[in-house]
Length: 104
Image (cartoon, rainbow, N blue to C red; front, side):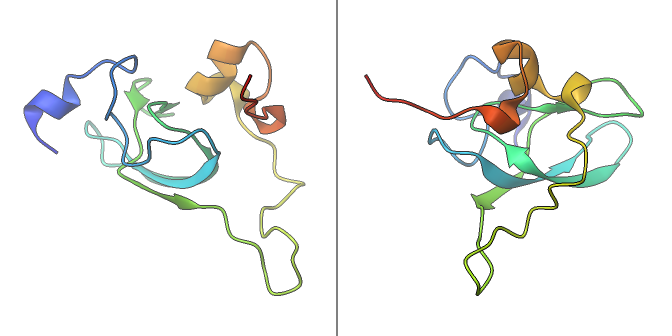
């Protein structure tokens, strides 16, 4: 990622690899401390806060959520989504896990 891309604001297009409306699986790496994490709550042009550095980090990889062979999601429904670290939750004012995109 170039220095120019790192400086982009979330309101600009192209901050994340995926540019659609659906939730994706994202891989994150903090540019300050190197902490890495994964999330099944990754969205286009939306980041998550690094727990160590308290900076917003955009995913460097995103891919569609996958279903297992039995058609069930492989997302752990018992794992709490850290809403306080999620830019999408903050923008919506509610958990992004409940968000459904609707075209009008």
